[in-house]
Picture 1 (cartoon, rainbow, N blue to C red):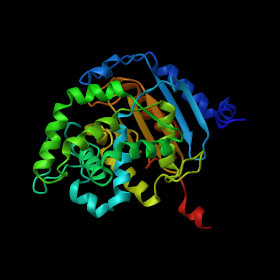
Picture 2: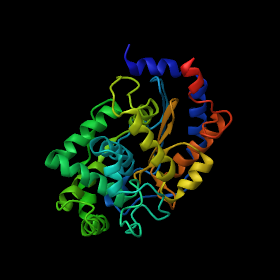
Picture 3: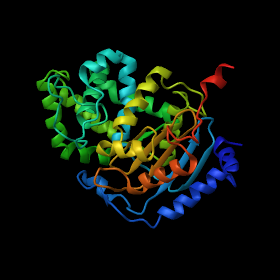
Length: 330
C-alpha cells in the first residue's frame, strides 16, 4: 500500500478529518475578497477553488477540497530561501543584509530601515529579493535549479515551474525592479541585481498544490526533516529562525492580528496559499485565491483561526501541550 493510500485509510473517521470536512463545508460558501490581478496571469485563477490539507509531524494526512490543484508559491517561498541563506552564510552575515523587524508596511513597500538601509525583514519583497541575491551571488546561473531541487526535497516530490506566471511577473514587475535597484544603490545586493531578480520571479512561480504546502509545513514542524521520506531539509537551528520570522512577519501587516488570533508561524502568498506550522505537531496548507486587503487568503485565514481555536493550537493556549521538554529528557 502506498503512503497516499495509507494516509487516506488513516484519515477516514478520524476526528481531525471530521473537523477538516466541517470547516471546508462551512467556509466553501464564503465569497469575501478579490483574486489578485496585479500579476495578470494570477487573475485567471478560479475564485471558487478551495482546499485544506493537514499533515502531522509523523506523516499522516487529512484533507478536503481542491488539494491537487496547482498554483504558484509566490511569497510562501520567502521563509524557505531565508533558511537556505542562513545555512549558506550564517545568521550574522544574513543579518548584515536584512533585518528581522516587522515593517508595518505592505509587502511590496519601497522602504528601508532608517540608519542601516536594510530591508526590515525577509518576508517582504525587499528582504526576499536581498536573500535571493545572496544565493545568486554564490550559485550564479544555477541558482534557480538549486532552489527548485531544495523545495522539492522539502515538499517530498519533484516540483515544477509555471512559465506563464513567471513571464507575467517578469513583464509587469517594475516595482520589484525599483526595489532591486534601490538595494543595489545601498550595496545590499551584488552588481548582477537584474539576474538575481529574475531568479526571484522564477522562485515565486514554482508550482505546487495545497497538499505540497501542508507537507512543507510538516517538514518544518518536524524540525526540518520530511515526515514521510525522512530526508533532512534544514538543521533544527535554522528551522527555529525561520519559524520565528514567520511568526512575527509572515502575514504582512496582518501579522499582529494573526499572532493574536491563530498564534503559530505562518506565511501567505498572493496566489491564495497559506502555510501554517504547529511546532512538532502538524503543518497546515490551505488554498483559496480570494484575498483580503492585506493580501492573505480570506478562506485560508478563517479556516486557520477556527482550527486553532477548536484544537488549541495557539502557542499560548492552555490546551497546546506541544512537545514537552521534560517528557523528552525523562
